[in-house]
Amino acid sequence: MSDDEIVIDGGMPILIPEDEYDAECCFCGRVVRFYRPTLLMRFRIVGLTPHKGSVLEAWFPLGPSGKPGRGSKLVRMYRLIASDQRSDRISLKFFRESLWRIAVRTVQKDREQKPLPPTLWHSVVDSILGRIGPIGGR
Image 1 (tube, helix red, strand yellow):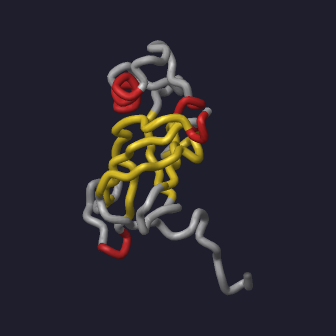
Image 2 (tube, rainbow, N blue to C red; image 1 turned 30 degrees about the vertical axis):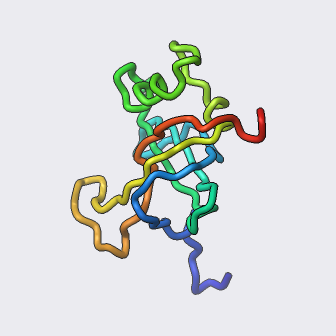
């Protein structure tokens, strides 16, 4: 890299068609986003699709204490897909060790709800629809 270039952190955003895909959770952890604690999940598309290997993100805001509220999207989703898990906490290991069915949507507005030009549209994981099973028989 020369002094005339700046590398884009994380590369260019990915845009794939809105649909449901099978994916594995390749990262799941707490981060700070917009000065707030957030759970970041990264999903890698698997299966027979031209988008195999694409990595998309899902962001779930946490409360000021770093915990999700009981009515949050994360907790509601977890209760639906992990009804056999403990109900008082969320196991991040459970996410990392499973294959998932995810719904992908296209982000067409910025965080202030202003329209983005099509060149800035990108895909994110809108929701986790269900657990397919453990990865590699774990």
